[in-house]
Every structure is written in C-alpha cells, then in structure tokens.
Length: 260
Ligand SMILES: C[S@@+](CC[C@H](N)C(=O)[O-])C[C@H]1O[C@@H](n2cnc3c(N)ncnc32)[C@H](O)[C@@H]1O
Image (cartoon, rainbow, N blue to C red; front, side, top):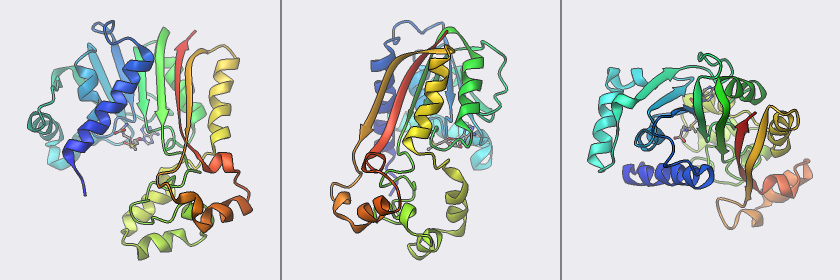
C-alpha cells in the first residue's frame, strides 16, 4: 500500500546520495538542473530548495494529470508532510530523453534517478544529455533495479518469485493471474529497456573513452530484494539459460560525469 511519508523519505535519501557524491549543495543557487525522468516531481521539490531552476522533464506529461490539478496537489502533498517546495522554481516539461527539446549547453547539472533502466535507447539519451549540459557541467545518473535483478521486472509486488520475468515465457499471464491489470501487463511489455549490466556499462564507457565526458564517480551495487532469492529455483534456472551470477546479482549503477 502507498505510504506518502515513506515516499518522501525514499526520495529524500536519493537526493541526499546525489549531494554526497556531487558535493555541490552549497554552490548551486545560481544553477539550473534538469531532472530527467522526473516522474511525479518527488525529487524536484528537494532540488528546488538549492537550485535556481529545476526542469522536471519526463516523456509523460504529468502536469496534466488529476484533472489538471497535479501541481496544486503536489504542493499540498509537500505541505501535508512538512517538506519545502518552491513551486515557482520548478518547470514540468514533457520531453523524450532521446530527443530533448532543450538547446545545446542549456543546463548546469543533469540529475536522472531510476530512469535509465526504462529509456529504450540510452545511447541516444546520454548523447542528448551531454548536448544540453554546459561544459564542465555535472551529469548524475543512478538507476535500480536493472532488468537482470531479482525484481528487475518492476512488477515484483504482483509476481514475487525472483527472476520470474527472465525464466517464465508466460510471465504476462502470470502477472494477470497474480492480480495485475491488462494495462499493467501492457506497461510491462514496453516500460523497461531490458538491458543487461554490461550493455549499460558499454554505453557509458563509449562517452568516457571518447572524451565527451570525464568519469568523476562510479558505483555498482549488488544484492537481492529478498535475502532468500538465491535459494529459489529460479536462480539456477536463470543461470541455466545464460545469465551469469554476476548479472543476476547486479541491482543498480550510479555515474557522476563531467562534460568536457
Ligand atoms: C521509475 S520512474 C522514476 C521517476 C522519478 N525519477 C523517481 O525516481 O521518482 C521512471 C520515469 O522515467 C520516465 N521515462 C521513461 N522513458 C523515458 C524517456 N524516453 N524520456 C523521458 N522520461 C522517460 C517515465 O515516464 C517515468 O516517469
């Protein structure tokens, strides 16, 4: 069940990780930031406290949701939970990461959390991100769970067997039998880019090795959502069909890049 307070705590932690890695919290009051794959704006509120402008950008036009009341409700949600929210500094923009509407060298910082496992062509997205970032600007990209993780289906709340999406050819039927709606099944079919960890890494490596960006920080984390996942028969099944142990245990990655 959705817990609003926990949702704030969770997003606040993700922004705290960004501050901790980027170390620019006290330097950004005149900077603009692009929150890419901003979703319903839960990071934007935290970022708006420190940046001059936040471009909360997403391929979905969230601001038209809830009968056009999205912005008002988001503001109320912050007040209800005692969080600051500088609405005048946040612009919700509908744009595809693979074809950003922004001009070259437009933003000082890019922040993208839990979106790179969804964007269909992340090479194109990273190229676009680099294009719209100013020289010396920072690009922070963190994402979890990657497709090969035990909960990489993103529908673990319905189908709780680990790695079931990798080993069950009838996974969509299974989702329905576990209570997912046909709309959720349709979302499952397209919402994740299904890239394996090495495919993600190769894309970042390309831009680093060719000098478009410098690598300031990288982290890759391992583990399972459930401590017992590795005892489940799907762990062996997934390895039998070609996934390595390393892939199955890779949950997420975080990059901090600086545009050259
Ligand atoms: C898991 S949500 C994360 C939202 C937000 N960053 C957060 O952590 O709360 C992934 C977001 O990526 C967005 N997204 C997926 N593909 C995209 C694309 N091609 N361009 C921009 N946003 C995209 C989705 O619409 C969704 O809002």
